[in-house]
Structure formats: structure tokens, C-alpha cells
Length: 503
Image (cartoon, rainbow, N blue to C red; front, side, top):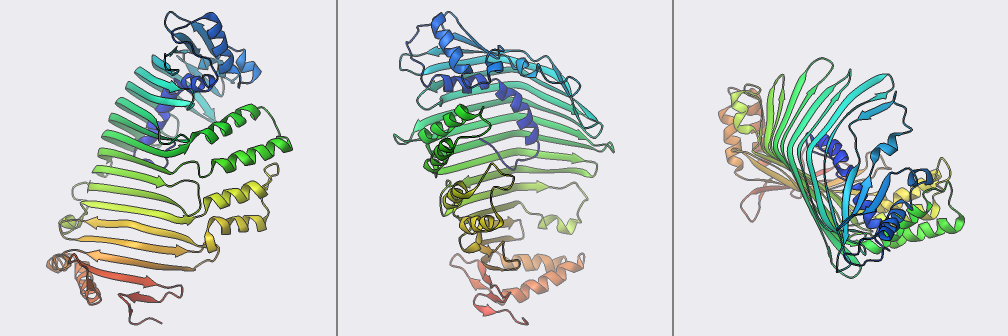
């Protein structure tokens, strides 16, 4: 699953995992090849190896199919599948890109009595190379001491039914005139399971944990930044995936990938396949957590006990929702960076969870399918683009929902929820309806008054808060609350009362 917005250091994780995932390419090709492969448990033969190799290479360009990129031979108990990535680099100009130490990966696959296939890999990685972008050359290294992967492939699902992966001693370096980066992980483990939710849909769960992360970055001015974390974990739940339509679309793309242009009948088929895939899945939830994050800079060390990131969405459908969240627990600053009077005001926990709602994704995608001409530089006319925008955003409105925005410390506890509606095509048009809650409000005011002699701004803030409290109502749980409504004319109401001194 692709991960978007990532915590510190995750870019290295994704880079090094590209090499790790290279070993899994045979496994992904395996699931494709086995969809129509007849299975006779424990029957390993030369003919079976030839059939598998043909299926592996069926969707490759002819030159690659005959290049030795993938080879299959019968072993004693398994078929031995060799994937040789060096074949992909034969025609690359060494002045632009060069690499040494890259070697073939060996996978073992075995048919099982129940029609499933057992898959396993074991290898290591130790490569170094150089690439040129413009006039700038970058030297790089990737190293993984030990990699292991084992799983069960379900040919009907075209995916793993289960899989376990691990890697140890992961490191990378990248050195250019502009920047040098050195990063390491002590170990990585990953598990994945797929279950049938209904005869037509599957649920996928995955968990990844990476431990002992360090990264050092040095910029052209020789400024050094050290990033570290005890662990980085990622969990993904993918529910209600309609796997058959996805398979049909996948195979259509493979069947036609070599064509420069689709025939009219093929274009109709592609559009039909996209339509039948909607909404594709019911829910996607992804969370990433970084433990004991530290960022050491020339001005001192910043950190957090925990940094969490989440994303969730409910499918490519009308009235869809896409949510994002970030939580920071016990953030820390270098000693002396802020005055002592501010120490108690530093938050212990900060949370921001927002979502975009009322997105008509299915109707918008359908409109694009029906009207876009992807054979031109401008697939949609200006009028069509405007209409597509109106369809994706009903009434031209985009609703931003504040599921939770909060900050808590020893002297304050604030949170808010509500919505803001904006109109992207009508600059300045928006309205907001939020409710702000404050717990122990008097404690906050007392803290500001107590430290006003040291920090004059605190005295002004205390005065403003006392004024604001005059508008407060009491929530059922005892907190002070303010419902704040700002209409499209910028008029403000607090708990139903007009804010004084408005034009």
C-alpha cells in the first residue's frame, strides 16, 4: 500500500525497501502466473517448469522475455524461480547509472494439496553505484544483511493469502555535492493476511515494524542533522476489496500495455472495467507510529515520545470521505530555547484529525471516463473541467470536518470540532461552524496572571480570555464551551450571540 505523508526518516525506509521489494517481484509475477496454472501437488517436472516460465514472461516485451530476466527450473521439492535484475540494466548508459554487487534472487515455489502455492525466498543485498542527474553525480550504497520471505499464494485471489517477511542490518548511504545521507535500521519484520469477507470481496491486514532507526544528513553548509527513533510501525486494514473486477482490470492492462493506442472497442472495454470497479473497496485505514523520535540539530535536540499518523477513506464512491490525522505525545525542545515561564505551557499532547467529506468520487470518475480524451494534450475542455469540478464537489462546496483538534498540558486543555465549507471556484466564499471546549479554564487564566510580570504578553492574554469567558456556556461534562459560527458575510456569532463591534 502506498503510504502518503510520512514521519521523519520514512523516506529512507521507502528507499531501502524498494530494494527489499525487488525480491518480491517474482512473487507478484508468481501470483499472476498461477491463476491459470494447473496444480498437481508435489508433482515437480520439467514440463511444469517450462509452463511456469512461459506464464511468468507472457506479459513481458519479447526482448525481456528472452533475456533471462526470469528462469524456472524444477528442483527436488520446489520449482526454483530466478529473477535477475541485472538484465534490466544492460542497455543503461554507465555514464548515467552504474551499479555493482547486484545479483539474481532465487524464489522457491511449491504446489500444495489444497490448490494453493507455497512461496519462500532467502537472500542478502550489498550494492553500490552512481547515477548522474544533470551535471551532478550521486554515489549510493544499499545493504541488507539477511532477507527472508515466506507465504501462501492463493491463485484465485491473485494475491498472498498470508506472508511473513523480515530483514536485518539495513543501511543506505547517498552522497552528492549538495547533500550526504546515511541511514540504518536494525531490523524489519512484516506480516500480511488476506481473508474472504464475502464471495466477492476480501479483507487485507498488514503490519510492519522497523527497529533501531538512525539517519544523519549533512547539507552543503556542513550543517549536520541526526534523526533517530526506537521503532517505526505501520498497520494497514483494507476492507471489502472487490478483487475480481480489480483482476480483470489488471489483466486488461497487461494484455494491452504494449500497444501505443487502444482500438475503439478496447477503449469501451476499459471504461466498462473502470466503472465496474467502483467503489473498489469499502474502507482503508492506515496508521504509522514513530516511538522516541529525536532530531538533533546545531540549535539542540527536538523530539517526541510518540508521533502517530493516520489516513482513512471509505472507497471511490459518492458521498466519500478522506481523513488524515497527526498526534504528537510529549514533544520536547532543547533546554533554554523558551523561557522558564513557558515551560508549563508546552503541550503534552497535540492532535489534529480532519477529513474531507461529501466527495462525489464515483460520479466524478464516471464523468471523466465518459468525456475525457486521453489521446490529446488536453483531455478535457475548460467547460468540461469546470463541470468535473462541480460533480466531484456537489454545489461547488468542499466540506472540511474537524474530527478532533486538541492541545493539552498541565495548565490548559483545549479541543474543538466542527466544519468549514469552502468554495474553491468562488474566492473568499466560506462558512464555519465549530465548537471550542476548555477544561479547567480558570486554571489557565490563573497561570497567565501569575506569570504576567515575567511575560507581559501573558497579562494581555489573560484579559482576553476573561472577556471570552463571558460568552461561554457549560457543556454537560462541566467544560466551558463556545459555539462559533462565521457566515459567508464574515458575521460572527458565539453561542448564538452576535460578536460586538462587527461592521
